[in-house]
Length: 422
Ligand code: SAH
Ligand code: SF4
Image (cartoon, rainbow, N blue to C red; front, side):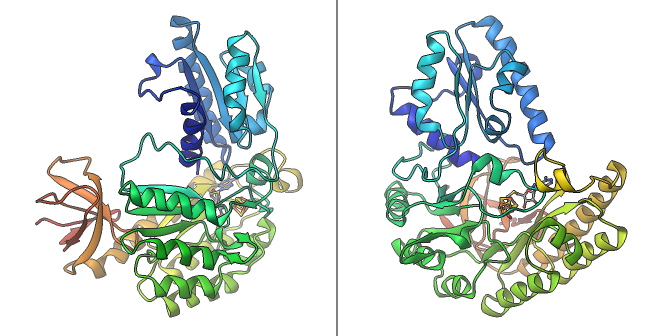
């Protein structure tokens, strides 16, 4: 989501005559787009700002801005705490950036952290300055109306609002013209996308119909809202990728209730059953939090057993990080020790590695279709891409090019990657 926001920011500035450069040393303006979801995300930003301080010493005209969620959360405090910061701009104020930069040029600080109920940057065509030309993100909504007790997003990104389907479809049409082969529709809770006369299932279908050669992915689905309609649309169109990211967060109903996720373990598993029934072979991934407030060993075991029961193909796994002003921070005690959190996370990771490896076995020796996205990090002779199930495959380049659909027969795998030798 932040990658796509940065592309919107680049667009706003490029339209005013700015150009994107690749080295901070050559920049007149550095904007750092930030995440507040966990404390270590913010810690990294403080580190980056210290680096920019030394750049500014060499080039006093350099302007530095903090944008995104951390700007929204800390507001003017950022400028008070870190002198190097000239600009503080929240996620809904990017259209104001050119004016704010002008203020900085005239010797003031530029701050705008107002949240909006309407802003979706609908007609702004993102400048995909760091793109592989194959795969693009398209935001379909902003903000979030859920109040998961641990989560800072509703505070930093504001209320949920949907972007007009017409502007979404126009953007995808432009991407098709530009040769892109895959779009990922983005929202904090895509299933609650709504426009009069257009639900998420309908939007997904409209996007899929634009071109059979354009793969369509989406993220994130909320277990309480993911409908069978969406599953049936997925089943109907070959170009909608058979992969669902369905964050569980915990396998314990007691913890889920404290988290305010509004589903039980059983209801979550019922959604998994629906996916398996309508979309056999669909991959399922998740997000998990280790060590949420009051989590007992028994709760943790429930998370491990949920993982085994679902057999996730992939997971993002986190240690619970208390975020100021969230319900959990105000009402519960962050009472699981760091040591126990780390141990539980480690157990979750070890199990997921096992499950990821197991999930790849059925593909060994079979032929799978891969969309080539780039060169493998290890070898210029090899390409990598993903299957419809979002499995990463590395394969010899041969006569193939980035952006091609290639039939590949993986011969072996690690827990992260399928590997084809010829
Ligand atoms: N809207 C998406 C998630 C957005 S945040 C959803 O509801 O699924 C991405 C992930 O970060 C979350 O799924 C959660 O697992 C994790 N996360 C959010 N807040 C966190 C916190 N305070 N500590 C640790 N992990 C957190
Ligand atoms: Fe955060 Fe919950 Fe909204 Fe996801 S659904 S962004 S976890 S509040």
